Length: 223
Image (cartoon, rainbow, N blue to C red):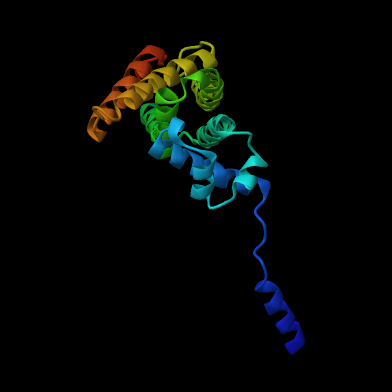
């Protein structure tokens, strides 16, 4: 028993297990977005990214050709996380207006996360040439939340709460005004950020107008 315990102890004190390729990618991308937003894209070097990530340039070059390659991957990485977050939204049970307002609030919360704000600021001010890639990522994210809302709206059409129209169109009519409001807030974030009460007023008004336009009868309560 003593010999077995000693051997196990010896192994546990050896070199730590190497990171997987996925873990290494996340480490580099998290370091890169920090460096880009603190120093500006133009000023960041591969040396700085390596230092921020606490790894070697050689390790980074095994995954990326240059910092432009990193930024492109960072864009898709952030987009994948947004798609996952949108896909995980569960529209709550209860009155339709309150359920949709809770969904709008959750959308806003996801999109106003620090990582997404940093990425948006970076693409807007430092890397406009990546706009084509950004459009692809934004389309995927928006399509995912439309899918979630469409499933909910389809049920409301079935029970006669909503007008009998294409549920995807009705879902888009809900999602895109919220997205537009979020984009407005992105641009105002630095100069004149709205307060929590103002944001909630906007979201509530948006959902109220939506309910009035899409409800099949007056019994569907707006928030």
